Length: 189
Image 1 (cartoon, helix red, strand yellow):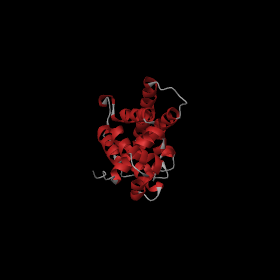
Image 2 (tube, helix red, strand yellow; image 1 turned 30 degrees about the vertical axis):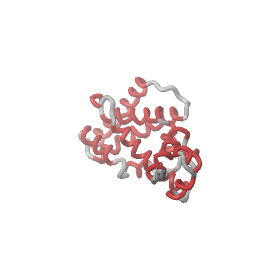
Image 3 (cartoon, helix red, strand yellow; image 1 turned 180 degrees about the horizontal axis):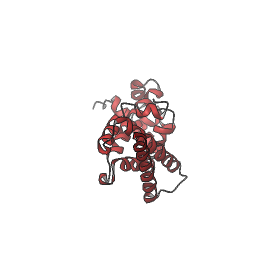
Image 4 (tube, helix red, strand yellow; image 1 turned 90 degrees about the vertical axis):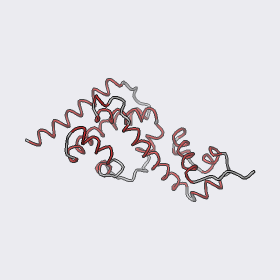
């Protein structure tokens, strides 16, 4: 019986699962090959360098995160609040992926302002701009405020330093959002 061919996509999926369950620091040819039930040869065939594999896993994790953000549980309570809460929920439910995406140095962008202008964030910002009936520049300003606030909460939670209280966090995010919108309205005057 012929052996099953290990594809590059299979390697990335297995490496993603290792990163998700054990952390990116545990992604290597051995752990990925164990996950696939094969030798290290197919893994190294597709990725001669582990850094290349981690970069592919980062891209997959980034897409996974974007989809997670967009799946808002209660859109009637507001898109911005929903995205902020999802960002924090992601840190709670996927702490290894959160740390990989935002605390590992793998991000392509070097600053929050570069991230706001990235292609990956464009669908999120488009949805928010439409929902808030603001220009893209105004939306980005509100987003940066909420992102900094949500990232602070998420980072503390992902690193097991704070217990999550969704009502309290939602109230804080709502205040930050209202403050950011108020600041934009005052700037228009």
